[in-house]
Length: 432
Image (cartoon, rainbow, N blue to C red; front, side, top):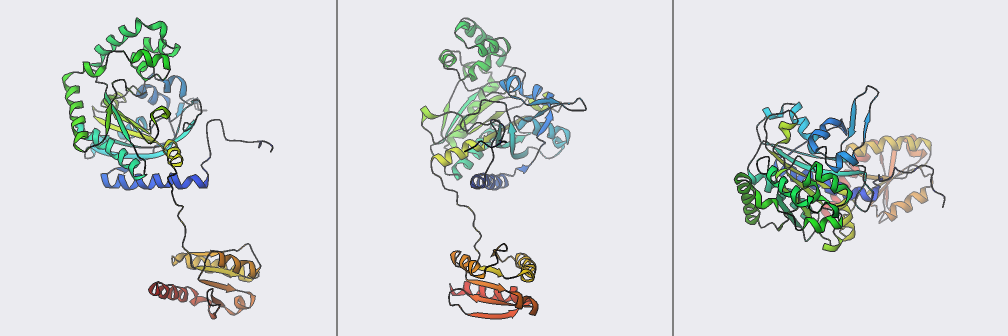
């Protein structure tokens, strides 16, 4: 088979109808959960000013250094396709004065994001995420509610063996001292680090803890742990987070080397994994944490905040691998509209709309002219009543109602067709 002339760009993919049911199912569950927990929907532009991400995510992160799609516009503005959702939400929070609304403000979003990464299973250059963010609340109970929301969504999608990995990465009070300790540790082992981590050591040693290279993983396993060097406030905050998780019996595992790949995180960071063997595990389904300094960093007031995001393609991948079925929503129609001839076809279009307005689902085959093939299709669909409109009926303003089970037919006025079918369907409902 010849390769088509045009294909989707590398690392980007079409979401075909057979996959749309998974995306729709996830979206519907998110909408229900968001409603229950009091989250409002927000949609931000796919493009943002590049500086928003440089400042918000951090200059030393892989996202900023390697993965952003950035360009200059004709007006010489520097814009980037959004690589993540939190910074745009914070920008909107500041821009629209949402800090003047009753706090905390709870927002959620869903949509496409973009990162220039090496394409692999479950990881794309255009990928879909949903996220939940809470702004204006510093209590650790909100960290746990965010984790619980994502956990609940995954459970509702029938994903099993879910585990929360969690850590605290401190704040501006305790992190500088830890960074010195970390720098000292890695400097004595610099020759064994990968080339990226040698650069990270100069710019931000915390990023080394996020490296997936095997040789760096071995070295970081012996590194000092931030959890042992937290200030009193961060220590107490994290202790309460773990107590809340224990209270709601959410399974978690402490991961002292979990830092997440963005510079805006403070205190709690978490990831949720699920339903794969440990040796198969590649990427988290959900990642997030607290970002108490981000609003102020982007020009707003000092505002505590916490949130997270989930990768939709990764969730769909696991659902398929575990054979979790998502039935396609089918229209249960008991009526078929068959027509013969041009005039009948024109009249049928109008009648079809009358049925739609009355919320009565109807199947049709407007492209076919053979009555036999249309009746055969009605039989295959298990239709109860077929409406037959031929040239004679179209001229006389009548229509034939055929009971497909008994073969009995009755002629009624066309303007009474909807009312007559509605009555018959009602009687049918009472009979069953």
